[in-house]
Amino acid sequence: MKSIAIVELQANPVIATQRVMGVVEYVRVKPINPYGTIGHNLYYTYDLRLDADNTRISVDDDVRRPHLLGSVLPIERQHHKHGADIYRLLNG
Image (cartoon, rainbow, N blue to C red; front, top):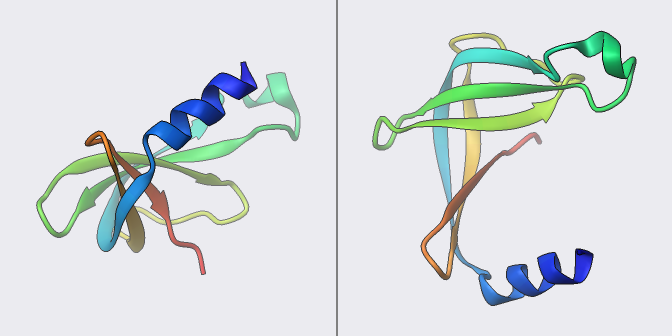
């Protein structure tokens, strides 16, 4: 299965990146039952509203870097060859 994922990524490369800003509107802890994974794979999913076009997106981030509701965060938009946009927080 790993070889299939690598082939798909190579067939759909990132062709452009853009730095945008977003406002945190909602935060969820994942997984829903944190006791089931005691200390493993615990992360936050943030719902953000992009400043540029008012689009709402969801982005995952590590629990060691919490962000408050209303925080303005830098985000990288990665545009892929076949039209998909993927977003990631720029923690720097």
